Amino acid sequence: MQTVSMKKSSLRRTRFHKRAHAGPDYSVPALDKGLDVFEALASSYAPLSLTELATKIGQTPSAVFRILNRLESRAYVLRDPVSNRYALSLKLSERAHSHSPVERIIASSTKPMRDLAQRVKESVHLSVLSHGRGVVLLDVGSPMRFRFAHEIGSQFSPVLTNSGRLLLAYLSGEELADLLAGDPDYARLSKEQREEFHEELKKIRRQRYSVSSSEERAGMKDLAVLVGNPAIGATAALAIACLTGGKNSADINRLTLALQECAAAITGSMGVTYDRSQAL
Image 1 (cartoon, rainbow, N blue to C red):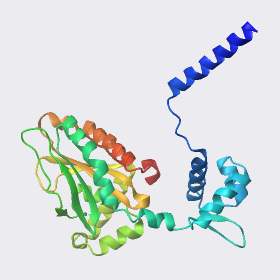
Image 2 (spheres, helix red, strand yellow):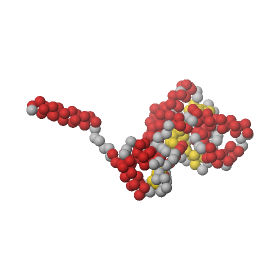
Image 3 (tube, helix red, strand yellow):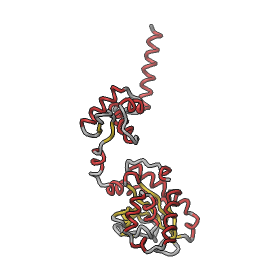
Image 4 (tube, rainbow, N blue to C red):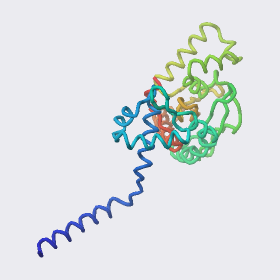
């Protein structure tokens, strides 16, 4: 009896030891199952049957049916009465669009951009496309005595600037064609220049960043990387303008890598996942 008691006591201590090191468990299994259903439907190009959904998320059909029943009653999921297949409605998208993506981008970018500016000793700015123009949303100055600044709210040509071309490169074919059709700078390009322009956009998509000589200041390089996810229309260009002379001349790769790390942090803070390899 004493041996059994000691074993039980040892087992209790072991369980307590595991809990103490694992930390508090805030999981909500029912919510996890519901989110699994959402993600499975969102990742499918076609409506799914109850059996297909259950297999995809590793749950029983009865458990998935209860979840679908509640989602359908709240109009988040639609069921085809003939095939009995399920698909997401537009209600979730409607709810998401009630919040401005620009506000979310700014809120998510401020601290990572400040940290980046302190680390690389360069000014950093963030821009988006709006009504066919590039617009500076945020600018964080370098901690150095002499710095370059971009006025918040200032507009620029997307065709003639590095950040603008980066953002254009990630538009869909239809969106790009519509924007360029009304762009006066693009209209002034010759046929050869337009071909070179579109080849540059393809190159930007392949290498996932953009580097060019500054159109505004001689002796400077503009570096830009993408923030956000083009698939949901929430994107911005995170950029640095730096001198090519002196110690910075050999640091383009380092600055580009730092920009990419910062962009990944901002994108994650926005609650967005985006694998840039999918954009190729």
